[in-house]
Length: 445
Image (cartoon, rainbow, N blue to C red):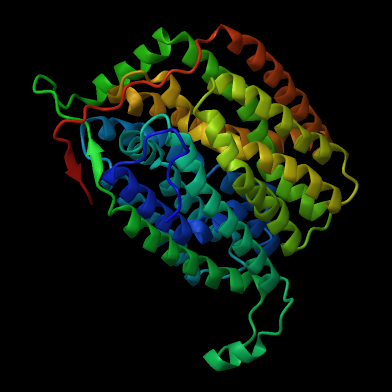
């Protein structure tokens, strides 16, 4: 069994070890779904010949899930966490399986099903991270989550390459099609077969994750569940009173919006201007991003456990910005590969900070869902608007995405320097006390 804690730190207890094991199994089974969700805009453009608007609409799909995470955060504050992960992820699988009924000429059908899967995938974030916050000790949380995510991203990278090689018809699979009694399908039709299979695998991972026993906080006899309006009031109170957290989120608003503007544009630019194949799209969207993420995530996880998220995010953004500069200047698809490796290294830490950074500011465990809810809802609003702003700017620049990539480079690099400078005023990293431990109420799905 792999070592679950660095030397000279206390080992995990039974609940922590069980959580690690089941989350790792869920990550392995969910890796194919992760790859497909990342490839969505590229598959819409290449396999379904989607318009720029349809690609932007698909890219913005997760916005509704992130905004709806406000309701998940509200429910997570006052009830069990695991059902708030299990049922949305079950619906994610349903929409991925539904793609099997689509005609490859019906791009909007693919966009709607894939976007719905993204909605249910992303709305679980506050509940899932709350489980990590309750079951893992704070001094080990980043490293443990980083290790499990590393496995997920490595497998997702391999799955994306395998899928792209089939779609690019590198192998003669006519014998297999004859065996199952069908004609050789087009790449678009193959997409409608592959995505449902990944949805089924992802659901199997959800079943394993749902077996985790959550160390729910001990109920306060004087507390009551509270109304949705009360939760909303707490959202605004936290936003108003916690200046450091508000500044941290404002930086995310600036560089995050700029980054999201480029998500759909990258697929459109790669296909229309650089003539990318399915293999190229798999490399620049999954393999060359998630493999470096996996290789660096344990390293970043240790830093997340020790440093201010604002300061660490600033240094990460300096690496992150290189990708946009390469996109602005690259004459061929091969150049994009180098920039995507830099993006992957940065996202190794950036993904952990996005998931766990809000916990640094939530000093009281019971308020963790509020901080996570604010973070995910604001991200959702960015995803709702930014892809369409990117398409609009592309039209202003005579259908050329390169100027937008360069503008994004300037914004991300500039915000990085400001975050590093302003983070000097934040207190050193201190681990908040965990949830009350006596006689914890153990819950599962």
